Length: 144
Length: 116
Image (tube, rainbow over all chains, first blue to last red; front, side, top):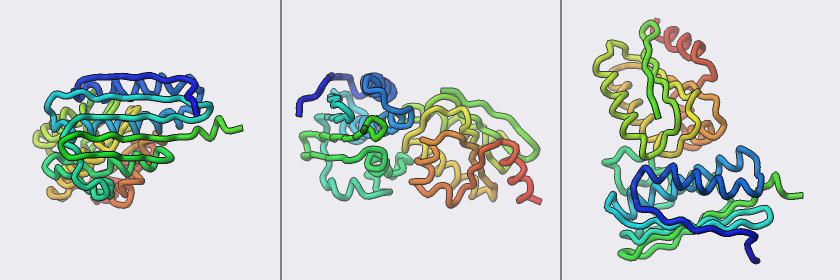
């Protein structure tokens, strides 16, 4: 299926860019005219994925985070990629409450939030190479 | 991101305004911890009614403060009206351990009742 619109964004792994990335994603997705709640779902999931790339992928060193958004008639596909340290055990990382950084007062709920606010979440990761998270959501308000 | 403090009876109210994510979490954490050291109040209300966005970083901030407050035998409550934030609180089971109210006055009343 061909997307009706697509965009790419690249930014360095600074925590200020967490809000930048989720606002850009929401602005792009708003072209489809989903509900305010559906937009908030997208913002939240993007925020989690980008935060993971910054604090776990790059561990607060400087790297490039990439975001690709594809819009379809009534759905969105958002890919967030880092070239950071990668996740050793993706299944474990996706468990609720699991955190690799208990020292940081993190909740370990990042992937759980992504899964709950989106329809599907795919994670591809290789240690030493980086992580790609793909977020899928169909906007039920646009289904006619 | 902004945080404002006020006192009502024996309760410290921390109103968080704006967006709470990993970037703003550290600032909020420090501000609240400093204020709690200065304050003689043991009970704390997190007023999220002017918070427009929160992700799972907010859960870390809330749970971290909850542990500190419990250690001092204090009580905690949350005021929230935002549906997105409510889902996050629900997901993290925060609502099972910290009462969430829609109105600040109700939260204050409930905390003061439980102290007596």
